[in-house]
Structures are given as C-alpha cells and as structure tokens.
Amino acid sequence: MTLQPGEHVSVFGSVFTYTGAEQRQLGDHSELVAVMRFGDKTLEPSRATYAGLGGQALTHVAITTTPLADVYVILVGSSPDGSASFRILINPLVSWIWAGGALLLLGVAFGNLGARRPETVAVVTRTAVVPSWR
Image (cartoon, rainbow, N blue to C red):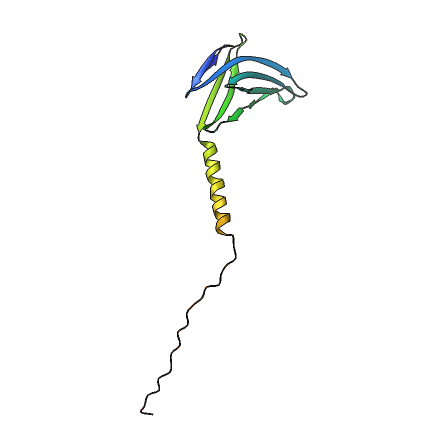
C-alpha cells in the first residue's frame, strides 16, 4: 500500500499512520527511514544503500509484538513526492506459541523432579514338591 505523510491505514483492526521519511547518512551507507505510528509505538522500517558495494540495498524490517500478534512493517519503496509504499504483515498469537513452549518445558522439569523410588516387586516362593514314588 502506498501512503502520503499523515495518511493512515487499518489492517485487521490495527491503525497505522505514516508520518514521513528522512534520509540518514551513516559511515558506510545511507538509509531512507520511514516513520510509522502504531498505537503509542513508533516503527521505523528502512532501506539502507551501500555505495561501496555497488549500490546494493538492504531492507530493515520494523517489528513489534503485542499479546495478540507480531507486527512487521516493511518499507518497499518511496517517491520524490514523499509517499512511501509499505507491506504490513500481522501474525496472530505468536506470543502464545512461545508461552505454550515454556509451559511444556516447565511441565517436563516438574515431572523430572524428586528422587526416584525403587520399584518393589513381590517375590513368590514355592516349596518344591517331591514325588512320593522315589
């Protein structure tokens, strides 16, 4: 989806607002950083371009986690007019998968606690019967 600064979009009930982009010059590369508001959080997806590597670009994905979903915002491209294209992915209930794994490990740990008791086996003794014809 392509947004102008100040525009917002709703994805699965979550509202994202694109506030603008800025160019940052760092030591060995330059970054185009887009600023996206998601509730009270600020997400900054970016594209870094490395001039020393022939202009190769690298995408930095902005990731945030809520109790109900993991949210990924990817900067796909930008235009000179200030608009930017994004890809927004929402993966529901990811934190619950991690919680389930932790609960499973906790159950295994508690199941292995304590001393092992030796198993008692009842021994049946029989008296030998000697035939009377001998």
